[in-house]
Length: 235
Length: 235
Image (cartoon, rainbow over all chains, first blue to last red; front, side, top):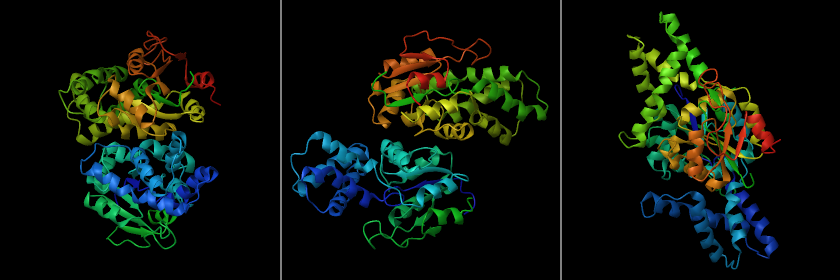
């Protein structure tokens, strides 16, 4: 792991618990309005729309749109599929901002605080800048900059997203370590020239429904950011 | 000043003392190599190349290039004009990175710490992301994100630079306050729809050779960021 100067991170699932947080936020907004659904299933259904929406941008069917915009479009589908009608616009806006109120896994803030002593740190997420800013403020994430999809004007796993993050930090791709809980993300990062760290989040999508080990070759594999700081000799 | 949600800042001159810092850094690198020049004049000469170089990008003569790249090109001109020859590449690289080692005016870090309690904060500078990251680490500037020219792929005073900073924060231009020590920057920001705050830095370009008052209409005028925090009721 010699020569690494910057670390960039996947966020949804890797750093924050999107599933539990979305279920909680949606319930808090809709239960008082008399809605009764399986809140975790609602979160899963919303997330299931995520890749197809981004694929329209990646393939050029639609111009680049912030993830907040795609989330809102997907929300309409999920509300309809759950038979939830007649929500006012203000409530839909608040629902969509649930993605700005996700909680980090407990190891994330203390791990990043150690890692930042040795490395430049940034998210390299498909989430937009304002979403990343709100997650950083909520969870105390000490980013040097907000990099990722909105900077690159395209979505992971396109190589340009990883490479533009490295370039923003004046690094060659090989000087940057991409940290993620998803093998597909790391495979694409490696293909783009970055080095890769797998973080196990085995319960990301529900008990036992996350990745407990990488299914592709990676440079380092850990169970959380504290262990990553240990492995990278960060104090 | 109602409805302001984010503050964006000019950096060179407004937040950091480029002139004194560049003179100090250049002297530290070149004096041990036997170079004897007026270090402040060297800093002024380097800075004098700044606008013409960016103008080539603004007018489309050359594609967008990071300010570090323009600074390096300008450095070659200034070295030649000062009769400084035969510098090795490593020294030139270090000289160019002098722009990453500028010191903030004393009010800046404490002022930003107060302002961040109420507002989202970002630089909106012509400096590139890595340069802004290094200045933030050196001076303890608590940015939410690094916005500005490298995000917009163009240079101030083009409207797109101010407007893309507002858009990244999910703000309308009118919800963003541009803070700068230069009337021309504030005039362009106002034209782009932002609100404007003038900070007096009367000694920016040498004693009495900075702007002590705005020469264009602004929303607020202050003598530093502590006063700005007072005026915006930030604790």
